[in-house]
View 1 (tube, rainbow, N blue to C red):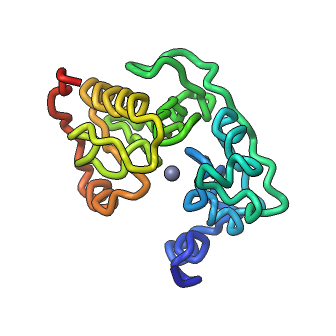
View 2: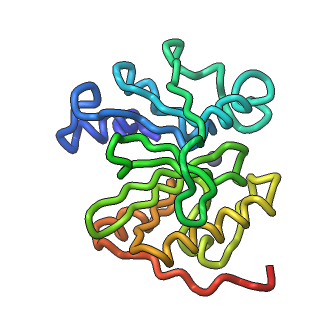
Length: 199
Ligand SMILES: [Zn+2]
């Protein structure tokens, strides 16, 4: 990735000032490819799931695909726990905003303590799925990813996301899905296929 392709310059090219316009950075989990842009947010509130943070530090974290030795020295994320009420098929949640329209839900499996971000607008819901799935296609086929060492939990998470999207119009935005931006622009709601009951 070239320097100008990093998240800071990209936001700047969209007219956004990372210090002024970004209220918070939420880490769905701490894999190296999700923390690599933190250097662009030295003045921003950073929120991370406590359960994932605890397994991402030190040598254990390095073995799990994290690079704690490259985290910014100033990094002290606000650690949050899934201590809120169930949300649809998700057994717990954590509200980020006072009105509860932006909240975290547990989506473990890709890695322990992974969370996804739910953003409820008036007529549509966005699910920022992090790496709970790599693509809507994999989600729909209930295919777990090659990184997970807990496919059973990952599979249960995929089914929960499908159930969630079946209950309210949802745009699913996995972090690595190349089709995500087009779906977002087109406001393309995910219509989950039936859950695979053989699983
Ligand atoms: Zn990951």
